[in-house]
Amino acid sequence: MELPLEVCLAIVVCVARRHPRPQTSLHALCLVSRLWYDAAIRELYRAPVLAGRNFQLFVRTVCPSINLHIRRSPTAPLVKVLDLSKLVHEGSNSVTGRLLGRVKETLEVFIAPQTSFSCVPAPLLTLLYPLTPLSVNALPALSKCTYLNHLDLSLISASLPVLDLLRTLASLRNLVFLALPRCSPIPSPHILPFDRDLPALPHSLRHIQFACSLHPAYMPLFHQVPPQLTALTITDAPGWYSNPVDTIIQNIGPQITNLSLQFRLPKPGFMLQDERRTFLALHTLQVSADHLFGGFFSPAHQEPDAPPLPLTDLTIHAGSGSITQAPTCDFLYDEIVKGDDDYGRPIPGILFGLRRVYISQGLGWRSTAAGKLHAQELQDLMIALEREAWQRAGVPVSEAVERDIERSCGVWEFVEGGGALGDLRGGLDGSVVLP
Image (cartoon, rainbow, N blue to C red):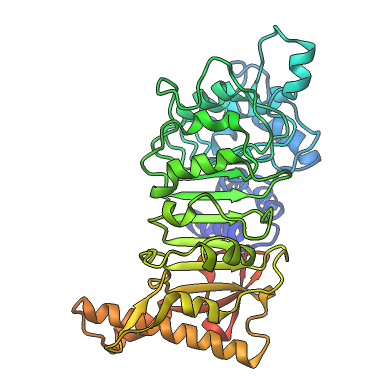
């Protein structure tokens, strides 16, 4: 007697989400019977783990023939996540383009490989073949993935033509996340940095990521800012912080609500160009401890009458160790409240709206009794301010509301290495894991 299909599907979903090696287990389930094959095949091909020898087997299964019209694969429409980040020399430009062409109707997430997506590096190409048109096999196929919402090109080691890249991105109407390549692109001499006649980024784009050493040739990508773009991530990269990043920040900064700075400070006291005046709508900030002294909250960069930021969530990573002394909870306490006025009311600081602080365990804020006391004082202050905000809004603070306030406000310590912000639990008494 076989189990009902609904029960098999529930077991398959549980295995796919909780098993440490789901791909091996799902493959074994497909070999049990026809019923288990029908239940597990979708999860097996939804987000395959591709590395080494199994990549060639995956290509043979999804692309049984070079020509799509000769032989189609029933498994190609099942692929929703195509992660080629683990590939080094296994693929080629043509194979990547062929894969994208087969899964274009259902693909939602694509992470490009390092070496088998784009053309040869621009300097070598221009020296050897100055009059030969570029041939990038993967971009035309990528432009047809109309349901794509996550595109990561950060690993690409060879150059991409800026104009072709912009045309491809403009065709991805459902794109939500975009990570630009860290390498230098191939500029076009026929386009200006802010030419209004160029194709624009998709209006659906909400999160963009680029390296701190962004090449000036990428400036045409930002000639029109998508209205829903509210999240920005700046990653680390070899080389110095580039001036185009400042120009881009001035262009998109006023609408950014979620900012993550993941690059090392090039020098002590460094800060982004007018960052306090630019990120006026910021609600969530992820920075290293270096940036606390070198950027947003540096006393040397503060204005006497600066209005409080709408910042509610602050994540502090351990950083690169370029600062001589890590900031403590006292530092944040003084940024939330500067003191009391003549009537005993708190004077708002630049972080008056801060309600949640996530601290890397590497900073050692709980390693001493004084550190634990300061963290507790910071948590009590944020809870008290949130309670006063409810009272000013005319909402009675009942026991249920008080519990919600205590759960939503506090100081958490996390271990860098895995997990997500949504998994944070435990307040000062527990550690969590964060990427």
